[in-house]
Image (cartoon, rainbow, N blue to C red):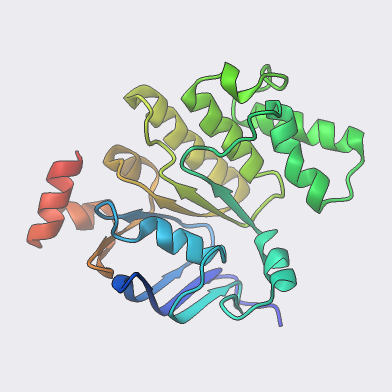
Length: 249
């Protein structure tokens, strides 16, 4: 049954995951209100990307619950899970564009697979999506012909193709120069506000966190160490939090 509660599109309870005997996530409890942009922070290997993969059903937890719009996804069959995924967008760390397809064809790909739009309607939507990320003149370019920042923008346009209510970002500014990273961060902020999206961002980029996050969650040893605003992190007296912020800035 669909959830009628509009305040909690994501609810995680007692979530744990291990790999090769190493516990990466250890009893995570987290709820994310609709329209909020939450940043996941932590050292490399802390479990940020693992948590994102669990949230979209690419991996299964060892134990615990994940509810998307009130529906438990950990026990769903593939058909129902794929229907839930249509509500979700995902921007991979390396954008994960298809090298042999143009930017327009990359953005059109989910529209072809998941919608009944006509070719003309798909073309119009693709152009609007690319325009929303500043790539309206690059529809016919291949990924090999554009910069890293442009690839991230194209990946974001594709992630938004099905008008998702929730979008997950895995290190959206990784490998970018500070100016381009700031542009991508501002783009995430603007699009999230325009579309009323719930956004979950795994990142090391503290400048972006300060600029676009409503809330930051710092993971350590598989658990939530601190959960609050950027100012809460900055004012924390916890030695690890202080060390992490100093090293990350």
